[in-house]
Length: 111
Length: 114
Image (cartoon, rainbow over all chains, first blue to last red; front, top):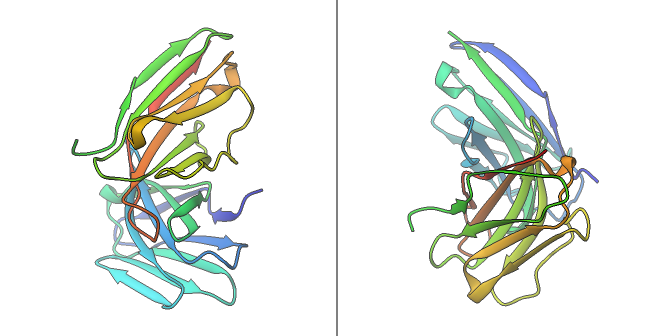
């Protein structure tokens, strides 16, 4: 069963805009929520991660918002740039064990 | 090595043949994962190795799939009697251990079954 549901499947944003990708999870035992970025022909790479003891984490233009009661978390990319065009995956795990990924969001940032 | 190394990077095989995909994790990483990514799809968990513990095989889609990890380092994913639906990118990843350490992915092995 899909333990992490991600939306939207694809997203087109103008340069300078805000990109928002959402994820929802079911297992309340999950305690680690990373986001991965994947460029074509490459493996996914860790972008930013959060634990459920905080509601928000910001690194540069990337912010994770976490809502424990709703079992949802989202990635916000501020001032989106064409170089941000990639596929983004949310994930959830207990510690680092058996990480479960969302289906991915293909982001296109138009110049 | 500097990163997770996978081979072959591309493999075309005939339906019914067996294939072996190799993963060389980052030196010192005790946790190793295999994922499958079908075209335009998400990452499907296949199997997880942690040190000397019994592997978590819960994601293997059928008994045609198997994996081993020798000496706690290199891992081989074997697909027997390949089918066209096995065509995908097989991604290997490793991490230092459990507990929220970063998982590092290789660039994948692109398998095409014709």
